[in-house]
Amino acid sequence: MMTLAIPSAQVDRFVHDRLPPPEQWPELRYERPELELPAQFNVVQALFDRAIRAGHAGRPMFRSDERTLSYAQAQSEVNRIANVLTVELGLVPGNRVLLRGGNSVAMALAWLATVQAGLIAVATMPLLRAKELGAVIAKAQPAAALCDVKLQDELRAALAADQQHAGMPLLVFNTGGADDGTPSLEALASRQLERSAPCPTAATDIALLAFTSGTTGTPKAAVHTHRDVLAACETWPRHVLRARPDDIVVGSPPLAFTFGLGGLLVFPMWAGASVYFPSIPYTPEAMVQLIGRIGATICYTAPTFYRQMAPFAQQHGVGTLRISVSAGEGLPDATRQLWKEASGLEMLDGIGATEMFHIFISSPPESVRRGAIGQVVPGYEARVVNDDGEPLPIGEVGKLAVIGPTGCKYLDEPRQTQYVKDGWNFPGDAFRQDADGYFFYQARTDDMIITAGYNVAGPEVEAALLQHPSVAECGVVGKADEQRGQIVLAYVVLKPGQAGDAAQVKALQEHVKQNMAPYKYPREVVFVTHLPRTETGKLQRFALRQQAQH
Image 1 (tube, helix red, strand yellow):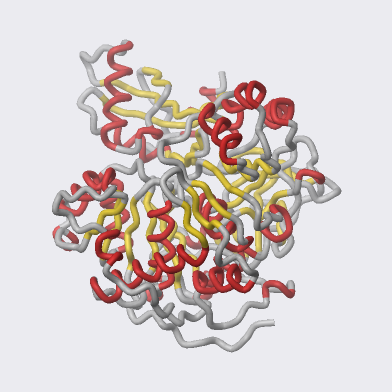
Image 2 (cartoon, rainbow, N blue to C red; image 1 turned 120 degrees about the vertical axis):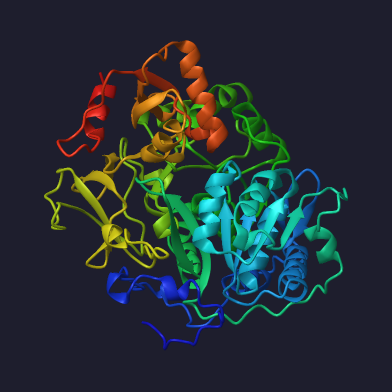
């Protein structure tokens, strides 16, 4: 059942005006009672109201070694920051706010305040370099930026290179009280009122732009509404995760990923649970030790990290941990069994997509089938289809197609029609399905490389390598790897007179690290005399992928 549409509260129509034409939108289905959401609500207000109505106002919401905030205290902080954005900076609903920071209480508060104020959150990965941030800025056209003080240099470089945004307001957070003359979000917020009326957004107003990188390496922005985010809470978290108010959640995926945003912010709020944010980056041993020290009960990370955590779990135990969620890349059964042996816990696997906001295929631990990701999450429908979109017989490998209460709407993006066809979403994965409805992941159907949970576009790495003076041509593909799922492998044709030796490999790797997020660098470089190409000169990546397997 759908209610009547409510007029948008977002006066800045930049994003609304750049959505795909309605005929290219995914079909959205709200066929379960819990998905019958109102036509007008603000998702941040709805999550706070839900927690407070359930009696959680005084319960911890955010935890760190420095401070703990209850739900009521966090709401006051969110109100203060929202007032900074609207009163101090004069932003209006629909303006985009670029958020840059690692996982921290301050970053989470900034995201919540942005969305509560009717603004559109544009969270960016902490490892992005100036050039990559510049592409995000050009696409999203933000009106302001909130940035962790330790990550401001690359952002300032990106803004300086963009005349239109060079003077854009930039507030830093996590300053620790230090004053270097840069406007501090905390200092400005401390002077604001603890009350702030949430923007009365329509359910269809935009809450966030989630940037992903497609096979061409140019950024795509997936658009998600307030209704998308709340609908996502009513699917996988309700039916599969089943978190409780006494849960303490930890994890490594960044809040800039929708995997991290859901798992480490939105879904715990929906459950009335609390999240611990670390002061320093996680290592596998530190994660296991932290789980024991703080009594964590739910952990989110990628299969690679669980594999690295296993020996420490075997050594130290996992304390009160009861749920370990794996997503971000394919989960090898060997990793699942290794973790189960070390921790005693059955992994909760899942596949989701930035374009769909979160997980749509997953089974709770008691329903796991070896080798399978799981069954379709209640609220969604999934099928394995051929190239014409027709369902394939049980057991045959084909393309995954998904439909449900969330779906792909790109911002100003011609590739919309590649993802959405006849109302169905095509995430770009090959699967097979068994007679009991379990889905078995086979491979990506595009050129995306998934390494240790990170998405890397081969053509993007190629572009960076081609900027090096020694490189004539190159082709980048994924190579299967037991530890990381895949690694980035570069086939390189050098210019005449250049030596293909270990020093050259290191030089190319360092060049890529300096020009883009370090996790994208090629861990292997193979020097070749030529690359396979079509008669029209197009690179045949499939041939390189075949070569990489031998």
